[in-house]
Length: 236
Image (cartoon, rainbow, N blue to C red):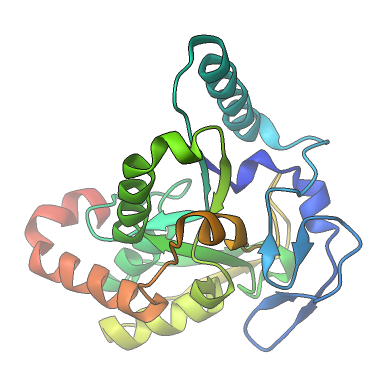
């Protein structure tokens, strides 16, 4: 079962100590909120607070899965994933932002930096679907040993990117530059930065994400270029 960072309260995430670089927000090493550090959020991060209706459905599904597992003796594992991406994802404004960003550059369509100063410094970790597949394969082969666990699963600090940095990579790999409007006002329930701390899932399963940010972007560009005629009506 897959969930997302949205299970965590957005106000709590936005209260984390951070600093700015030229291209992104970064988390400070020392945080006052348990389950957080410069490496990101662990499973111990507090769940008390509002998280948007979308996030509430994610948390509710987790609770139901765990209850069913206990009541009926089912083997269950919950993966709280960061942003998933890779070829064959049909990115839209509300889902699949990496593919959307690449596609907008490929077909030279305008974009927006929305909120948090409008500079595109918002950061997310990203995870290639093949890395997630490797983890699920490990979990299925060891399901009885790890059943009942909740894991934070994502690219982590090493495989993370801001919108500003994503723009630079898209420009480089597509050869195109697009107009990007800067909008200061934050969107409801949006967050400045989300990084996954994979410590627990790595300790228990040995899994780590392997596919780097730039390799992900290059692969998506090649996929769009190779299927341009088919994808233009969907992504263009």
